[in-house]
Length: 493
Image 1 (cartoon, rainbow, N blue to C red):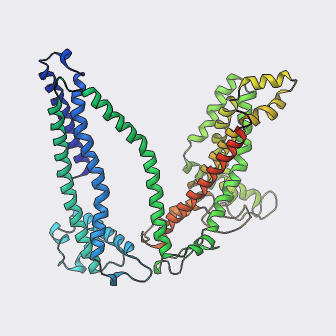
Image 2: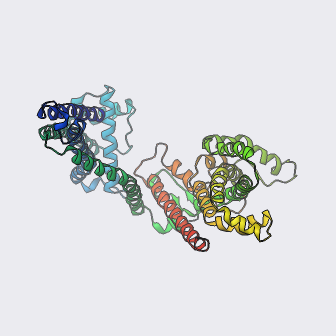
Image 3: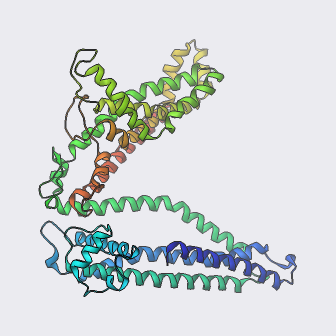
């Protein structure tokens, strides 16, 4: 049964429980609402909650546990002889999983019958030909044992899903029935429902934390899997990035230093553009501009934040890049030959800086406006001019917030992808020349996870190691920002 249908059935059971629970409560009071402890809607909500919450909780837990159990069972049936040099059991299970997905796709398209897809004795060559005919994603190293394991994997998945559907529906029905049985005039339905809603609110508030934990764990586990296949020393200290999609990474050079340097270099160029312009714009809007000018200028400035990054990337590729080449390239107006092509660090940095201006200006403007007017008045009372007040009173008082705005812009720059792909190129190199093409960690994460590469190969798993490296980098940046903010805030509280 499709997951959407199952959820709709549970919701329908909950709706029926709401109606029946409310009606039973009214009937127990002889139709007189005054005889009820709670409003009739609370009795219906009690039955609905008891139908929905346990059923959906079981659904979520089952969806998490089933793949783990099936992987464990199928993995135990695979002989060690199938694991080639440079591979692992996890990589082999990834091949089995993709082959099972290919079987599902072929069955849905009618290329393979359901009975044939589940038959271990089916002709191997005919099966693989039909899988290719269906356009199913099947690894080039598929063998008869892998195909048989994929058939068992698919059979167990379908059986588990059917059992899950039945169990979820039964739990929903039993929960609704129990809630309906509780619907009597003396039952404190309001207390139970409010307590249940409180628990749901706490659970909703915990989703962000659990999501963060899940992201970190997925990065950690896949990073560990990558380092089982590729030396960590070569990854962290290698000076060359040259992935090869043959031989399972045996000939690949996956040094992260060129990518980190490109990420930091382009971010620095972007901040050199965004910080002065954004900060000066914030000072003007908050201290000098009149109300009419501010009402028009600030929304226009913030429009830059709403432009999709792909548009900025096209702007870098089609406009800024050729413009810089016409100035700094061969035959340019300056008569120099510094920039050989439109894709370069300075191209991506300039455009990314323009994109970051509203992040810096808007946040800095809000922080500057939050500085108490009494501090300005005290400075004026001591004879300071407006510019002196801004330099010596307002900006130092707003410094923690301004630092936070700059670091937010830095985090945004580090995580940018499309502008880098279209404006900076794809060359991984260690160079100080801003007119050369470079690339970043995020751009390589995208390139490593696209295409026809084996997802369980080192060339694909390296994306998780890159993501983990970027996560640690931004975490360190945020910790440093927190230290700076606290240090300066103590002087002005």
